[in-house]
Image 1 (cartoon, helix red, strand yellow):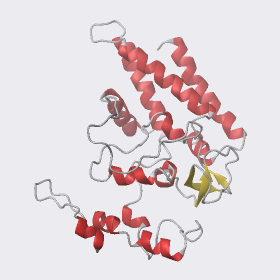
Image 2 (cartoon, helix red, strand yellow; image 1 turned 120 degrees about the vertical axis):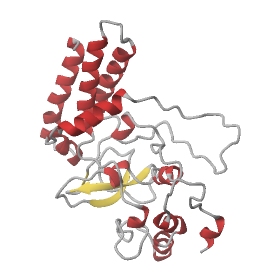
Image 3 (tube, helix red, strand yellow; image 1 turned 90 degrees about the horizontal axis):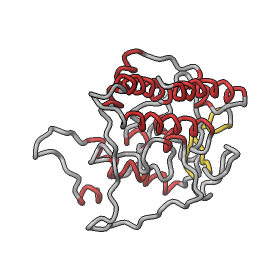
Image 4 (tube, helix red, strand yellow; image 1 turned 180 degrees about the vertical axis):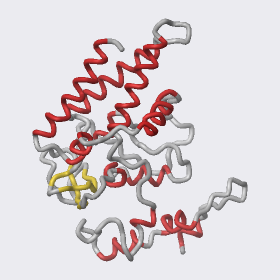
Length: 270
């Protein structure tokens, strides 16, 4: 491994205890206590080795039907956007548009931050406010965010840890591009990919790949979020809990054939 890269990863390990000493958000505390699982490490190694860059299409031949509200240049995003695209959901063609609409007003961590034996609260947070305190529902760039001990659990893309990770990520990518099977640096590239896998695994250690199902939030018996405490009125709560699209996904089954169930406009009127 190149000394500079090795030093960068070592520096990242040193940063975590420093962040901990500064009353770090719960996400950083979870990273500090994370253990490396060998099986998951091999999975992360394969993901990175097989990774191909995703490019979002621009200047579409058929423009989007809905109005687009581009983010302001001053708007902050969560730590996740250090590596992940905005919008983040790309794989599930059936659900990704609906999931990405949620990301405009729900933080990634609300669905994917899943620490064990920790009771979280969910509140509105203004991402442009550095205080990490609860903010009003009608504030700008607000998202529903998990809180622990009255502090938001998340960090943002301008955090020092995000800067460190980005530097390592870019450096590793550059090293990998210079490597080929015939090149003497190919062995080095393999080592770099493994280090990248360790970094990826640690960053994702307190996160779950799959978030709640649609019906986990959109129901009136035991919803995942307390909509009353989030400021929704009775009419809004009724619409959210009885939403026809979430009911469709709740009963949808995929059989891999042309007879696969489709969402029809009549479903939206039920």
